[in-house]
Image (cartoon, rainbow, N blue to C red; front, side):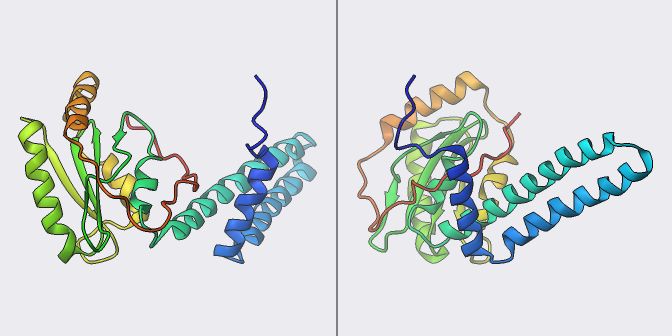
Length: 223
């Protein structure tokens, strides 16, 4: 299969992510380099006393340590890039690993461009809002009533994503959803999602571009 010319190569992707880290945290890349070099030096010292094989282990371990720290800093930088953008919640939700169905369009939007997104997964139906608590609470209540008319005997959760008291920060949203109890089996998840799709109205999208171009790092797969 021919490679898509519009798709950047692996090295180019790494350079792009490194630039994002540098803009978000000027000390980020020096930390990555220092961690890798420091790890390598430790193994060099061990190699002096215990043999050359430690040099080989040191190279691979230094690369691993550098990539782990690079990945962690990239994740923080991407969250920083998304923060405050309309549709940032959707960018987090659609990047989750596992058997999650995320509605592409918001299921509720108000005049202030606050949003409510719907997710179906093992916990049941999850409504996730984006906006101040005093504005999104009524939206969540109304949408939850609509969902419960169709999702009979299926748990329905409502979650507010944001920085206010009682809300879930954007960076902790996927982790919060992963901790919800598993109430449905896999066939039931698909069946509930089909029912929810029939309920979806055509909603106006928020002003400004949604951050679809931001590739979120995949979280842990739900077991």
